[in-house]
Amino acid sequence: MARGLLILALLILPSTSVGAQGKTPPPPIFPKHRRGIYINNDRIEVIDATPQAPPLHIDDPSVPDKGEFEINLLTEADLGAEARSVSMFIVDANYGVVLHGWGHDLPTQVKFESPVVARAEHASPYETGIGTSAFGLKFNFYNNEARALRVAVYPQIEFSPPGSARKGVADAGQTLELPILVSHESRFVTLVGNAGIDQPFHDHTRGVTADFGLGAGRAILRKLAVMGGVQASSSIDLTHNRNASAHAGFIYGVRKAIWYASIGHSIASDDGRHLLFGAGIKLIIE
Image (cartoon, rainbow, N blue to C red; front, side, top):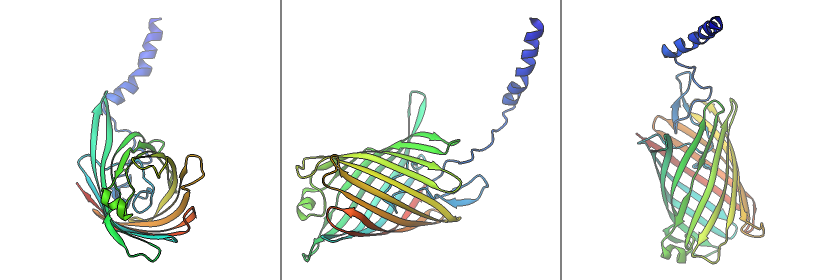
């Protein structure tokens, strides 16, 4: 029996001694991306090709690093068959924090977004005001670098000034959004999926809606990525508020400034066709 214990100890000893020497494990095949430009395993600066909003209307699970600001300054246009809406200036400010509890760290994004919107129906003149604004927290609770799989939840509350609702440039009342975000990366493409529920409050004209989205992105140059996605929303019973659209966009990065643009078109909509445009800049401030 003593001989057996000795042999077992000799088998275990090499592995424990390697750990004691502090040997560095090999880097993951798919390292966690920084927002915008990041350093890959080959120590080369490359663009984050994960489908994201903006330029698309799909959110990805990643969040800014702790203490990092990500500020999007953009403009968007929705030229519909029944109405035209132009978000002349949108500020989308995000900040990275890390929450601690129960022995775990939870990377989190704090978000605030507010647009200045001009909207006109048919031949009517444009009405201008503060559009629907949003405050949210994105909790990136699962990151598996070995499987290149990331998951987050992104609760948000949307609200707007009462005067803007009367002008038609924003929705009345408030809306609670509860989406879940999933991304998966391969050597060829990065996929992102969204699914969520929107619950309006203090507005009897709107009901609960379900949202779905799927996007794919790929870097074609070190600092240039292309991406596309489809989004769909509908009332829970699939009888009204139905809308589906497709977007294509690109991101080009230079250090801390990321430029992007997108174009989209409705696939099916209860209120006719929509032609969609967007362009802006993402600033990364550490």
